[in-house]
Length: 301
Length: 332
Image (cartoon, one colour):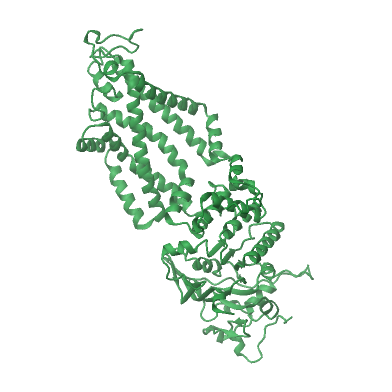
């Protein structure tokens, strides 16, 4: 390889110095202009930081589940910012610690459903015909079942744990990604550069995942950010029903459910976890909205 | 000429599209033989089946609705017709490759041009990806684009430069056969000449055979050794440049030449071929050109046979059965 390097003017290392002006730089520039989307992004980043640090800062046994019955039902104060619950546990600590459940379930569930759904959707859109029909019809059957009901069924069948919860919610949202991906693949499939790739000798797999998928990513990315929000909501719903993260873990939905019994006298037991869920979902939705605008080619010009 | 110098041997190619509205006969019995290093021009109106022929050579006619039938399709002695998909993928891009009409849509917008050239090299040659990238940069410089632009995206290039990139991709693995599907139609005239020169030089360098699909007779005269005139899915006249340009035999070829603007008489009216290309779902019987042909008579409605004028020149026209028949265009 070295015999004619002198003839070559540019080495790979040199080439890497030239900055790639990619589409993502453009998207980020558009995204930055959108103030509400930036607020969403900051909240999401803050939540991720809180979730990661609270895991190491608090001790699960001593701070989160330890019961101090003499302190039960204290009103919000300087010592207990959000008050204490029926077992005397500090609500603020539990909410902060609970962020990791909601976020991890939301993100992992979306990763599962996105990986599975997008793959199926790309295959359906690329091959068309019978393959497409089978995949889409199966998806429709799943869409026909209410998502919480399907989640309950899966949780009931496989037992109650956070991993099963992630898979349950992941499976529930597979059809959504499948249809989005298929719709995004269809216009790209007919492009001339796809035919050019074929002529260059690229196989089906390479065409689908290297050439078509990157060109149809925008709607899938928007779906992902929105999907985290709905994943968190579904996880909280299932926990509220007692089928999500097993007690006494401070999952926000489970905390809502616990506080429900005392809603007349100690409203803060439900207000704060509810607010936490609302702010998280709102932040992801704002971010998703901003991303959609930034990725929309029609607004690019 | 020994047998192994034949790059492409195509016999009796038929392509039809079976749609709900009827069967479209796109290519009807087409033969083509191409020697190594030679260039053939495939000339004809829009809808004559030129691009379909090219796609059929690559076995890329969409199926369904396309049905490709063929007596023989050999590329470099390999039987492409009965090849499995895996072997086909090895042939595409390596032995045979294609340049598209519109460079604006033929490049993938999410990859840098360097990556797109490197991909084809990486797929077909035994080398690391870094080596492939290295060679991609060399290819870029070969087509006259500075190597540091390998890291740029297609939208950062002008139309003419994109077509150079497309040529670089097509020639990256030094294919035996290059199909150029109207490579200059989408470019403006000044760039056309540059791109054609580039193709001519690279072709000479790599001894690539070329099928040039075009409706510009000037390009054919510039680049090709042989000309095949296509009409309604068949070759109506084929010969060397000299044969077809100076000893025109088929009335359709004559019509094509007559419809060119006359450089000596700039005020002269253009003389188009009257009528339209026949509906490919419902081709006329006999010679497909007879409804538009000024020399046509009843015998033209019978099936036509190929008539050899010389070793290199043949014409598919029944009018030559009539004693003393000749077309109006003068031999030069």
